[in-house]
Image (cartoon, rainbow, N blue to C red; front, side, top):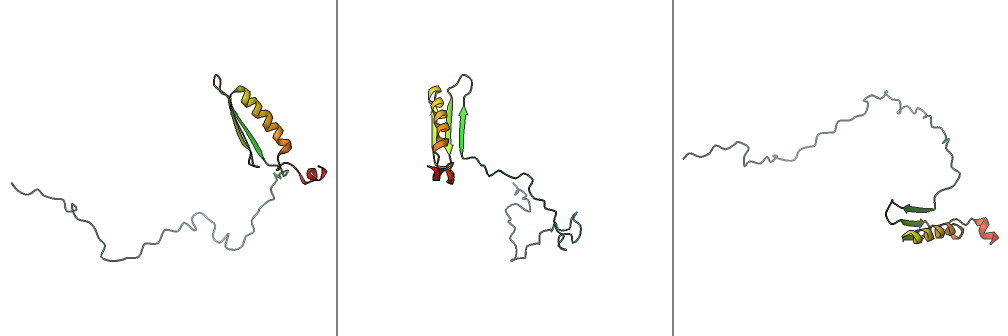
Length: 118
């Protein structure tokens, strides 16, 4: 029986002879851009934000899940650290009432004017 012919790559691994420098990446600068537009200090046309906020932001969240035919659940979270949850019709209704009442007692919602008046 004669020996089986082998592929010239089989069993051989390529090892570089020594260290070599990596090829530089292709630069995408200048493709489709006008030459020197940003380099010449062209002022940008930045306009002031037309959607000015009224300094309000969310503090507390009430998430209620009540799929048809399933037991309802609710979660009440506040940035002050309050985190409550409820399962079942009666408990979810109680949590909704407690979440509404928490608005008046939350330390994050009490303004400095309200503290002085109290």
